[in-house]
Amino acid sequence: MDARFNYYGNGVAAKFTKYINSAGAAVSNSALPTTTQDLVKIRASQINGCAYCTDMHTKDAAHAGETQVRLNLVATWREATLFTEAERAALELAEQGTRIADAAGGVSDEAWANAAKHYDEDQLAALVSLIALINTYNRLNVITRQPAGDYQPGHWG
Image 1 (cartoon, rainbow, N blue to C red):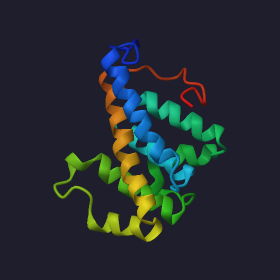
Image 2: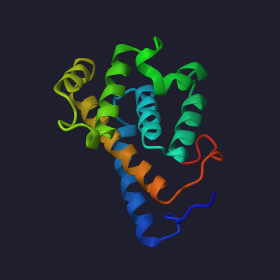
Image 3: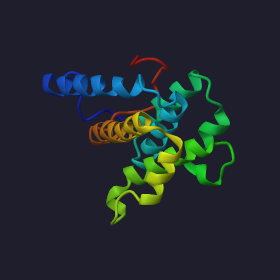
Image 4: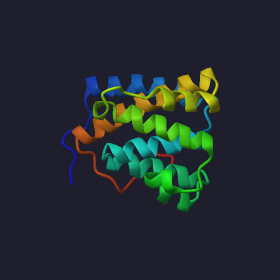
C-alpha cells in the first residue's frame, strides 16, 4: 500500500506536525509513566484502525522493555490480569475519549473519577493531552493511508 500523501514533504503539513510534535514533548516529558503512555497510544491506535501508529508504538514499547504478552493483550485489557489498576483506568479513559462519538455522554464520570484516583492533576492533564494527541496522529495517518510494518524503534526520537 502506498500513502496517499506525504505530509512531511508538504510545507503546511510539515509545519503542522512540527507544532503537534512540540506539544507531544510536554506529554512525553511529564510525570505520566512511560508504560502508561505506550499502552494508551497503542489502544487508541487499535480502536482507530491506525496500522502505522499501532506498528510504531508496539515496537517502541517492546524496545523499551514492555513484554510481548502485555502488548498482545492491550486490545483485550478488560479480560487480562496483567495490567495495574492505574493502567486499566488510563485505558478506560483512553477508550472513552477515543470513542466519544459512540457515547451520547462522552466520557463517563466513573471513568474520570477512576483515573483521578490513580493520577494527580498534572498526570491527568498529560493523559488527556496524550489521548487527544494520539487521536490526531491516528487521523492523519488513516486519512493519508500511511503504510505500516517498516517502522524501526526510535525512528522518531
